[in-house]
Image 1: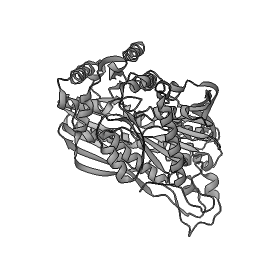
Image 2: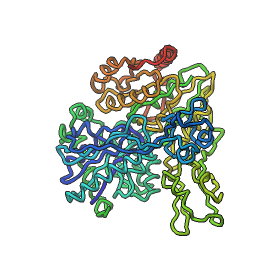
Image 3: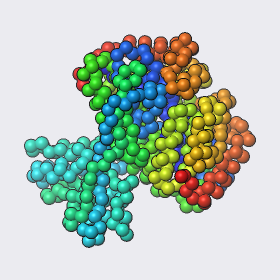
Image 4: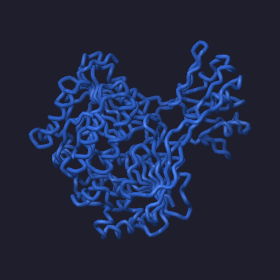
Length: 295
Length: 284
């Protein structure tokens, strides 16, 4: 089993469009959308849901006013200022789910029920199975939901003897990103040729290094700023990230998105289509992608 | 006044709007870059920094001379950040949420706290703009405490502009909560619309008035506008899909510097925001 995670640091550089294109090339894969906060891969893949489950993302304190004597210990203990001092009510938006108030309330007046923080799905697509999820609005624990969808993708791979997991990662370098890269063969960073793109590649590259995951880099819309594209290429070389190619700006990308297709389905022979195929071939030639992972 | 600039989808132009808006205003203005995973506003405003403060979170420190291995700390910890195995206690600081439960529950007073650095905050000036930004340390997961720390510097008689992170989960909520207005930047594509809908739902849970900026207008279709009309969320500004604007942005420039008529447009945007924030919540 192998897993490739598509990342970017900076959002909106083309992770999802590239993942969809790669799905077309791969003969045997499971798709995994690890951007559970703002998932978009389903818009191109039109998944047909086969299995759906709730994501229990933690617990939340609720104070029972009948039993509460207003002693104020919970307010004193809560490090997240989640309990209103006048009403002894918990602000669910601030509650961290640590359970300290629940464990230490002398009256046993606090409940700590498990809460549903989102849903996850196993679906069929025209390219193969897909595991995806939706985190509830304003919910936390996106990292745990990312770990869960990746775990489910692994189960399918083992059962179906599939070769590859293609994971569409979240932007940034924080909690959900860290949850999306552990145990992966390699990450492919999609960079954008701008001052922000150069800055953000550096951070996401450092993150991959920190967790000892081999990194590859490609540039999307490379012709919009050849000078910044060169800076990214140089940075990749300097840091030992394998530079796997660049994609020219192509209106086909947007048009394919509107048609809910991948760029390969609408324009395989377009400049962008040809460039994406070349990147795919380079990615699969990377030594890290030749290794079989046990988990 | 606090204006939070958010988006759902990444890369739609939050930073472009935040920096150009801050630069256009003649009022006393402060820009707070709360996208602490990938802060980019500084690349466009080039502030001179004069202060740098670490953001610290307390994590448990166990005195094994006092510890009786009763496991109460492990039982209270919901985050798996402290484990007792036989006569060994192991802590996992990167999993710790700093709730303090283990220090309170320990019957032997064997647990104190030591500081762990989550990241840092920098303060500076760019012309008339007061500038603040946070950086999450590589490998750390806890961005909300850094965002909350930046927000403690919001000033009362100043226009505080927050550049929020993408998404709709806890870091975004930390960057929007308590704002007077949320400005949602999107692009007219299926991805832009899908994530805009999520962002509008997130704003609704906070009861804050909001409005939309459509960036790269003309690039895709009209679905975003139709959605905005249906939801009753006003489209306050459109920035066209234009090679010159893309070029200025890629090089770290400000639109208002290179295409002067945009300054007036950003001032108008601010006037609309002021008006709408006084009218109160406008989502259905």
